[in-house]
Amino acid sequence: EITMKNKDFLPDSKIKFTLWFAGIFLGTFLLLFVAGLVPDELTDTNESVFDDLRLRTFETAEGIKDTEPIAKVIGETPVRLSIPNTKVNVIVQNPISKDNILLNEYLTRGAVRYPESALLGTGNVLIFGHSSNWTVVQNAAYKALNGIETLKHGDLIYVDSTSSRYVYTVQTVSLVDASLEYVDFSNNKNMLTLSTCNTLGKKEQRYVVEALFDRKENL
Image (cartoon, rainbow, N blue to C red; front, side, top):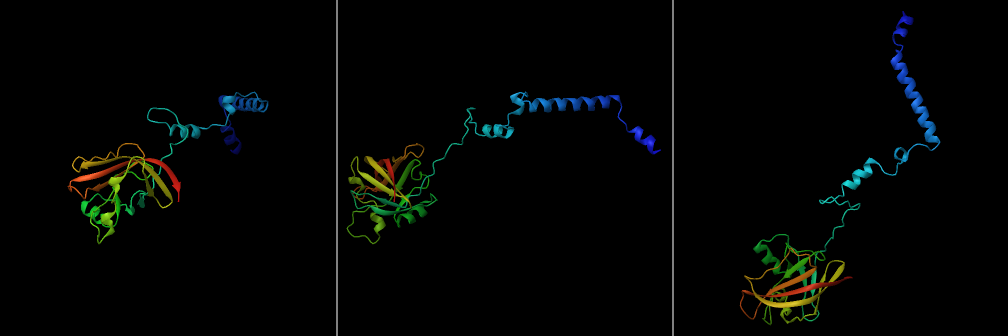
């Protein structure tokens, strides 16, 4: 019975042919491979399917292939503003809310970077603060931006982060109506905008200073 069962499991002629063919094919391929006669398309292992997938993940929306991800500019938070041709030397606050009550509270501590404006090195940075023509004030923050209206084209402005100094060059100084004041945060210009009230005129008026980025220095 054991002999009969073994015979039942013997492969038929078709299976025998398939096994012989596979053995001959693999043996021939191995000999050609050793002899260096196999086509490059079957032996090149420098790129894999993973490599192709990795490259495709860096394709842009237009389908232009870029083999490296685009480096993003990382901005720095301003912590101090100083202007050599004035007495301005003030700490810069960085609130995360646009709530007017909160912003007014921060203005009692120094100048303020408007939350929606850029960080240093990434676009248009808006810093605003109080100014006063009173000789004596209880809180120095109310004189934070005194004298910016006297700035001239080419004057320098320094804005410091914790590790770097960003130097800006004054381009324009304007007196504008507060209702018409407009600061463009969408542009890609690396610049600085300062704004303060006109203490010698109407409360509705603002002095606005625009300055372009000149250089970055290590502190």
